[in-house]
Image 1 (spheres, rainbow, N blue to C red):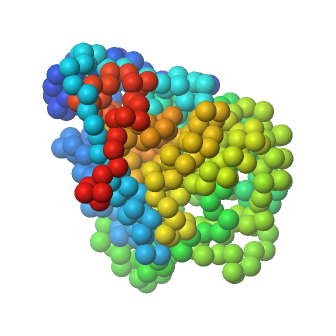
Image 2 (cartoon, rainbow, N blue to C red; image 1 turned 90 degrees about the vertical axis):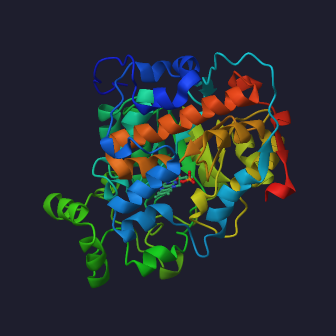
Length: 428
Ligand SMILES: Cc1cc2nc3c(=O)[nH]c(=O)nc-3n(C[C@H](O)[C@H](O)[C@H](O)COP(=O)(O)O)c2cc1C
């Protein structure tokens, strides 16, 4: 797969990270072979963003409320959204001391391919509403770091565009659309474009009830209403860009005319086009059609994980869609150990939801995950400053991961074992 040409190799002063990392420089250098081959895109806007929360603040300031809320929000009372995050805070680290951590190696293998970090980019739809070209921006940042990028069916960039403009290790996330021929067509396009894995998301039989979107008059396809026009007027630069260049389209869904769906199956504008009858038999059909790696995303139950493993999937993602689907669904970090106990000896288990810190990655790995996916972290970055912002998000997580590994006395990913964490009620 061709990667987009990138500028000269970086030397010193890879911006603020090198300074902020201090004694981590050696370790960081070991950790980022892939990233070294490119000059990181820089933006003054993100120069003083030291955490994912800082990037979130920048995104919030740039975007109209409706757009920010679409990315930031969850479903109904947002209990699962909050608990995904809180679950990480309920787990505490038990660091080892007197270990040589002068060199840290964050490399690992994800689905048979080498990755510079135990992190992949989760699929997120409609990114172009937050930053024009945002999908390509995030994919390029992932390629620069040498980590996998999952393209959403509902992306604002096509399967082919991402392959030619970003390259790197690409996975395609496929929703099961209400038209079978169209779904199979997307899968075939991903195969032809050289995507290495197909990810089937199974937690979106219907759309979650995302009340922020209702209140803000935000829907996809996008419609102007008196309420959201007033909101957009508060962010004139964003609004002018939309007016002058047009509203981004969901490029993979061009030409898709949904079959008639019942109003009952539509909890929000998201999910309108999907097939709620999709089941295990149909998943088996996809397993038969797609010969490369197959990932199932959106499992939290050990028995479902067992069924997926029996069906021959290559990885499972413990996910609740970032708290955007079923509210009061279990936090993913709480669900992870059960899924790992069920299938972890046979099938790699990834986890997503609420990862905002490098130390979260250590906790997830200690609880048995092979790697984590990040959704909003890079979204906030891209919405703050495009490719530079997405790059900065991964850079922050990488630096925090390296530092946490050093402070925990675990210089290699394989050193991260269950004894490194403790569930502590006092931390709740
Ligand atoms: C704005 C947004 C759009 C998303 N779109 C998709 C999607 O198209 N397909 C999918 O499988 N998951 C989608 N997700 C869920 C993510 O893949 C991932 O599960 C979730 O974001 C992880 O939680 P985090 O954002 O806390 O990292 C989306 C999430 C967000 C925030």
